Length: 122
Image (cartoon, rainbow, N blue to C red):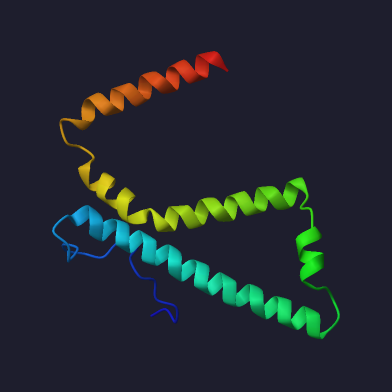
């Protein structure tokens, strides 16, 4: 038995809804996920800034003047993409549940056609 059990990415069963429109619940879940992420990030940033200032490493002015390199920008973009994936996970899980339905056949063939056009224009 493993010391580090892994949990499934998706909960089983129906998602409970509290508002008349289930989409409002989904939007609220996404918003609360984002709010949680921002709160944790702000606390961590404050800790770093406080420690740095106490130790004379850098201050708020240094942070404001910082200009990231291209590599740093790429790393930030990757992190942002991952975070957005987590925030919109609820929408994507619903879309995954719709896959295989007859009405999705046209959507898939459209996506394939657009992909072929994009490849030809490259």
